[in-house]
Length: 297
Image (cartoon, rainbow, N blue to C red; front, side):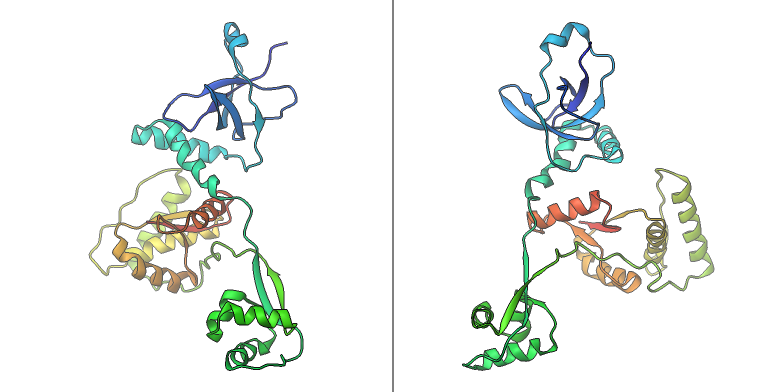
């Protein structure tokens, strides 16, 4: 009986996939993240496709997939996007894939967030710093340690001291979300006739086409951003995602203010100034469909 063979794409400067045999006890599907032998080392790679017609003369020379890693698989849409980007930019598929996988280096387990709240009687020794902190927490709300320290104008040591005395107790907080979901109906734009027609045409194009390019031509202040925002709102209502690319870093602050005024919250952000772990969390949230709108700069 012929052994099952899959084509695996390795994140190196190569455009082709390599064929590997699948061990009988390993359940693999396209998109799975795997470890494979590559030369004298092991490499993390992605199962790209089934190989239903492997060359029988090479059967004894094919190496086996070593293991399937505990990581979310790459969806078919993302694998198709890797192929498209490689073709569009005349780059090797392996290097495009490498950009997709690099964020995984910083994922790991989420850091535990700890909050504090009132739990016991007042401390025996009272200071002005402790008074400010206890006044802040008098509402019974749970606050993160750093947030409570900042709002009360005290050091973390003040909080730790009250925890040790039993006046405060620590509470494990749920993981912080990458971004809140924008509300497409938070503040609808009051369009003119021409703006409404442009927005309707753009939404129709997006609904009927998998990929297209639309350019809005208008002078400064003519409402181009609002028309694009309406297209983003339509994507949100349909459960789709939007990626916003900023042409100039100097426009970021103004854009974020306008986005918040339209949708009630800021979009998720992904750029080089974010800490690697933050970028990785945003990348994963986007890949998992948890983020509706992301801004890339």
